[in-house]
Length: 181
Image (cartoon, rainbow, N blue to C red; front, side, top):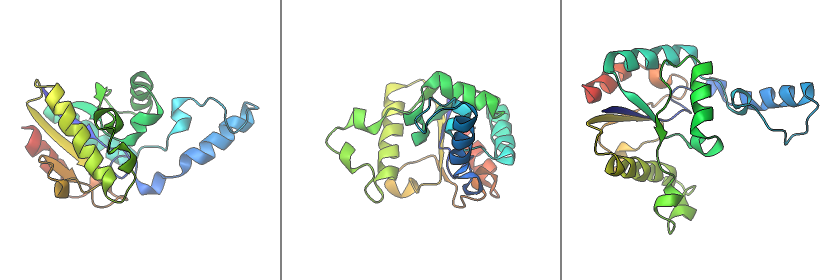
């Protein structure tokens, strides 16, 4: 099985879209007469994905046959079914099959360090390695993120160094497909 460990922010949800969820939440809550703590549908809860980034991701999925495992911290704010709905609403041709485990479930001692500078990347590396350990059926994989996980020793990693371009940046598609072939 081929797997893409996919982050969202800086990869398919570009920095030009960040903060949009606050406006959507305010509008939704005012229309529905709710308070700030209203129960939001999944499409209101998150910022939008970039349509060109989605096109590139769909091309990668089609060419590689890979499945998506969400490594983004968005996994903390919805369940897998809601994430599948979000992907469908945003035009991604495949729904995620799973989330990486939460670091706090793997290593309670260091879970408190998660937001320490640089720890988010380290934590994500631990989560991906744990997923691979639990799923020996994964034969080819790549992690795509705007966090520098290669410096943390993660192999099969593609960095989206520009949060304004994300997965659309030059040569990233080819790098990703190389890991999946």
